[in-house]
Amino acid sequence: MRKRLLSGVVAAVMATTVGGAGIAEPARADGGTVPCEFIGRCPPPGPTVIFASAAMSLYWALARNVAEAIIQALVGEAARLVIGARDEVVLRQEQSEARVSVAEANRMASDYANYPVLRQDWNLFRFAGDVYQSASRDYEFMDDDFTNRAAADQIGYALNVKYPIAITAAEDSGLDQATLNSWNQEYIRANELILQKLAPACASRVTDPTTAIVEITYTCTAANGDTAVAVERYVNGRLDTPAVDLNQLKAESAIHSSWLTAVHMLPILRNP
Image (tube, rainbow, N blue to C red; front, top):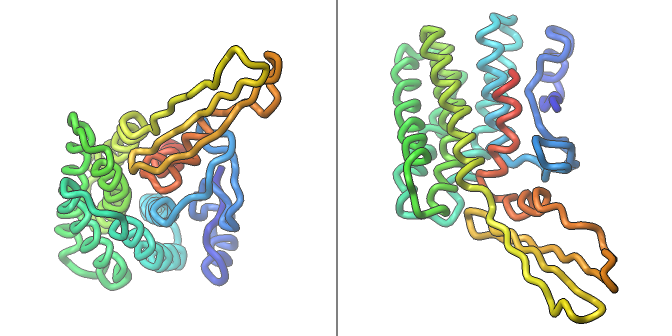
């Protein structure tokens, strides 16, 4: 599901000029929830998802040569939102294997916060290339056989900040379309790897099945160590509580995990 995330003057510009080609957002800005990928009701998106959606909307607007007023509005919005995404990456408990990636995300996001000025710089092409190289190293880490899921989770957040920065800056600096397409596909693949490798692990525990009342406790643990718990109760063999939806429980455990970021971002990236 797509909605406009912009407000005030920016939203007015978007509505009157392109009639709805706004920032793609997978959940309501008021904190509500909507269907999302294979999860019935997604938790609302965090700052990284909101920024990445805004930056990719800027990229698509640049690629489609929309009016300069719209570009300026989207540039300002992406530059404003990147600070929240940066903070979501750097304010987590730092894992040693993720230290370099997180430091680079911090620096690059801070530079992008000045994007209205940066995009006028003749070094924009070099900036895009540097950010892409960092994102690509994150991709290689995710594609490898890692053992530290918490570090990979931090890197998952970092790459979802870096790829949108690199892609928008590259489009703005005139990088050829074939290379841009390659970067876009790599970004999608990176999130597919996050979805595959950082999915919360779930387990169940059953009370004594010989009694009249039996409870099954389900626990899902996200890559960052956060957990969510739900219980099914059976009375005389009949379910006495709502059935536990494991996909929903995974999402609840992963509210602060890059796995949920990938769940939010993949539909947006696959259907620009």
